[in-house]
Amino acid sequence: MIAVHFGAGNIGRGFIGKILAESDYEMTFVDVNAEIIDGINEHKMYQVFYAEEDRRSFTVSNIRGLHSQHQEEEVVQAIAQADLLTTAVGAHILPHIAPLIAKGLKKRLVENNHPLNVIACENAIGGTDQLKQAVLKHLDPVEVNDLNRLIGFPNAAVDRIVPNQNQENILDVLVEPFFEWVVDKRAVKGTIPPVEDIHFVEDLDAFIERKLFTVNTGHALAAYSGYQAGKPTVQESLLDPVIKEKVLQGLKETGQLLCEKHGFDPIQHQGYIEKILERFTNPYLTDEVTRVARQPIKKLGLNERLISPVKQLMTRKIVPYGLLTGIVAALQYDFSEDAEAVELQKKIKQHGVKVALSEVSGLAEDDEIIDQVFALYSETV
Ligand SMILES: NC(=O)c1ccc[n+]([C@@H]2O[C@H](COP(=O)([O-])OP(=O)(O)OC[C@H]3O[C@@H](n4cnc5c(N)ncnc54)[C@H](O)[C@@H]3O)[C@@H](O)[C@H]2O)c1
Ligand SMILES: O=P(O)(O)OC[C@@H](O)[C@@H](O)[C@H](O)[C@H](O)CO
Image (cartoon, rainbow, N blue to C red; front, side, top):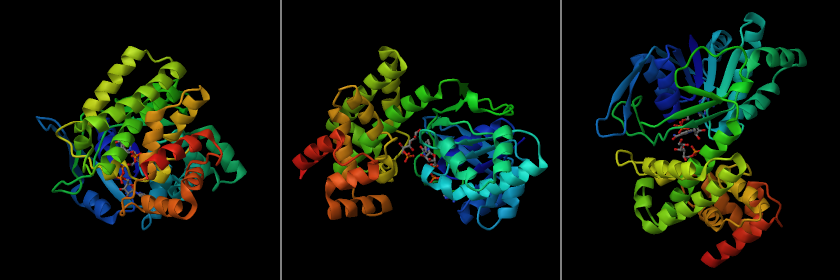
């Protein structure tokens, strides 16, 4: 079995690559990073280490690398023959890889009648749908018809904390032991050759909102508050009782939404929150706040971890002050090495908080959320 995976970064190597290789897939990693691709082709293996006392290690082998810009023909050929296509590049990169994926799928539709599934393993609601829409732009009506018959685009939720790496060998990855990969069963075409650790579900919406609005909302609250308090890592941020309380408040608010909307049991959900806080404070991981806070413009999007739960709670007549305060902290994230943070600060300076938030979130300028955020923001300056 052959898997083509776009994005040989932290999640690509530390999560997707490991799981697929363990299920006997031959992995073709596609990336723009020549150093990583050359390393994969030179060593043909790497190690995944678990962030735990025993530091278990796993060898991932049967891998090769292709450069997405310099080896287009090889990538197209690989897609034409693949049994599974996955991505972990960042949701904002999906439109950039869509043309090459489309080329590969066009060739495949001519040469290969076997169904194929494409799974975007990104932190986004409907990440695979976004990729499919971007791919469709490059196909003619007959190809679209064939694609809809033979190519599945199931959405997915992926969960494993993989921080920025500092390993001696650039291919090796230190990851937390916990992981969860949940895929929407309803959108699968044909069958995906067995992958032991994929969990197929009929109700992905509940799983993905639970993950994004707990793990990623909690993470974002910890990182933006931690950054404001001068903490270098998520681990250190959560040692501060004031920051921990802010995270707990926000997760209490998203928890209320998730339990009401999806019927999660409140006691079990509390257990889920506690387990996540334990994961955030894993002493064997060093997770920089600037990784978790990265791309604040994306994170302030309408369907994202902060604005979406606030919007849904406000529709239910609940004003979630913990999350609103988190949005203020995100608006104040001014890390100079993060291009989106720089752009956001520029927008705020030029147009003010209300216009800037409206632009990045897609909320109308007179939306109640923007008024609430503005009031809280004004108290801090
Ligand atoms: N790291 C985590 O803890 C974690 C956990 C769950 C989900 N995710 C999600 O996984 C995705 C990847 O995150 P990551 O932490 O692995 O980031 P990363 O930066 O480590 O990896 C992204 C990889 O994509 C590559 N890339 C960028 N543009 C490309 C292009 N045009 N073509 C091919 N490759 C390209 C980069 O070179 C890099 O190797 C994101 O959507 C993230 O939200 C991350
Ligand atoms: O990857 P992002 O930027 O969407 O979010 C940063 C972190 O919250 C995220 O990478 C988590 O570590 C991950 O989602 C855990 O499963």
